[in-house]
Image (cartoon, rainbow, N blue to C red):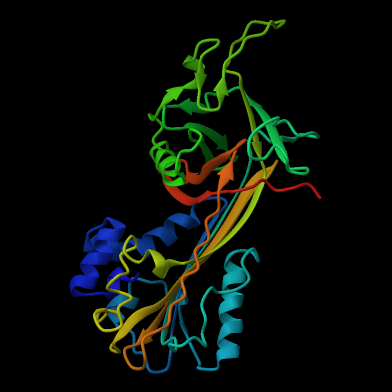
Length: 355
């Protein structure tokens, strides 16, 4: 949405960040909305709120649904209530507040926001273990973590020397991938491997491992059964997690293509509005819950834009990192199975605890 309203170097920087050319970037917001409507368990919403001094460019707004355009009245309390209500309505109440400060040091003249809600029930539910199965490791001393176990008769476990990835199948078109890296591996390295694992051809199937052979977090054994084995048998032990992260995206401006967009004098958004604007706030709130029966996640991302007048904003960057684990830190992705589109990604530090 930002790229479609930018010109010059700001436009080029944003396009590099999203990895698209100008035509595809301009068409993407509406196409994503249309595609999301067809996916069970997925809701995507876009919103734009303009203050009384901002006249939006009609060519830019033409790429957005009519219902996405709203107004800021200048009454901070009333506007905050309306924005919070929008966030709650589009995340089914999981996120109840828009992550911007309307009364910050730079008045918000224009607000761009997206809301995402992902939900799926497991095709094979987990059983919640009644005792702590980890005798060692960083969580061995935790009091009553929620440990989950399941057995799969599908080829759902893949391995490389970078990570082991379990695909937890949802009942619809949404899967959740859990990735475990080597001990001591940096989170971004494991997460990067997990993004690669969205490709079904990534890695080696755990069913190809020989008895006694090991992979990261995987051990292969044998036992005697009453009947011949006709299908794979994959046992999985993981943990429930319930995460919330509040991110100041300006702190990652370079990676997100926001360096020029957030510069109060160099930002160029002449295709967006007649008023000279720059990104004064860029924040995201994300919640993800992984449990015995399913997964749900919601994210609201907001870009607050201020005018060039006034003093530059004072930014205090708050960074929150969430770490996800099997029996030590692991990554997860929620993926739209037919297209491979990653919907939600995260890294978690501790399991949810039983009440």
